[in-house]
Length: 544
Image (cartoon, rainbow, N blue to C red; front, side, top):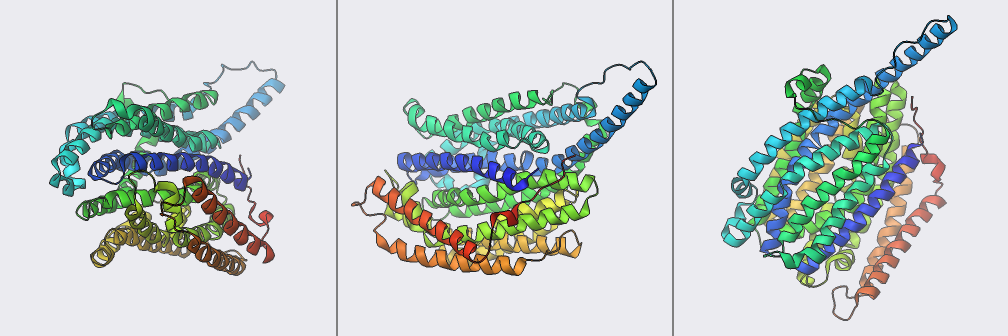
């Protein structure tokens, strides 16, 4: 399989997801602005998102995909042996035995994992609905100063908590499909949530009081749609899991117990990141009104490049690394990591430069409509500049952490995450008093860089990764292209008053998109002049 083509496919579909996500955030900003009620929604949505990362694409996927890839490798070896035995029997005139179960041991594993995941999440959802007031108070105590906002956050938390169950089952399906190299459906699935958001903002708002409740309804509708689209894709592969009633039988499967054992440290690793997020949200809720929203809008914009690069590469790499590890192909394993890191440097660094230099034009283009005024643009742009500092680290973690997960080593990333959590909160003590909400974003960025460096050092120390020849040229070309990009954008951003009333939406969009397109062309042209070619980054993996 050509991994560059697979990553490009996932990245292209993720681009569609992020475009619709930006439309969704634009509508949210223009209709609701940055107010106490929008803070309430983002706090309420953060709670199921926290558990989503815990039970879904976070801890669960990290533990489940390597076990599933190992089971698939063993099943392929067993199938090959059975085929040889059948050929030998046929040659000797022996009668063929009964037809095997088409789902086999893999089907049994999927059924047992789905059963355990489903019933655990049912209990978690019920508990979350009941404990919503306590959870909101814990994650954003500052909202208690505004009783209306606090009550709204509690109501929306209760509405959206079932999303945890829905999206976790989606993550199970995505893990299966990615392991079988079916990347398209998992990559396009987030689009459905964004479309549900957009539809709710446009058509459901008049039905709710306060109107912000429409977004909570949109989240739940989006979760149902995301799960529904997985069913046909899994059915075509005959890998649709069956949720059973016998939880004890599911837990008796040794492979399920292995997944749960691996999930233990993985839960701690994800929890560390989410604890940092909770602390930051709590701090932001005690700053100026709108701080939670400014951070959220900035984070949404930064998720655009981080998802296009990090999520795409991580989705492709983890199954490939797991398969290489199960088959004992050590050189391929190291080469895969090196390939991912090279692409990360050459793509993430110029994106970080562009986001930092053009933060105001980009924020104005996406959010400066309706109630989202020039002050909100300036505050959100500060967040984007702070986040851009750590973009390279954020993306690199998506490449480096699977280097441990695929070897079923989750403890090392946990230890690193704990150290980074402590460092991040120490940085908050210094940075928040200096630059308020932007200090929270900068602490996260610096923590991401530290996390990536520690992961890289751990992989190198264990000889899991080593730099292949050519890294000097990679850095030279990337830095030269990024400097050219920064110079162009620094000049171009002075060309207009991006938040002025005299500039309409279409002229602003034309200027910003043209500025970015020319900057991207300048960067790629610089790389080409310095000798970079697309074929240098083509990477194939053995798919047995």
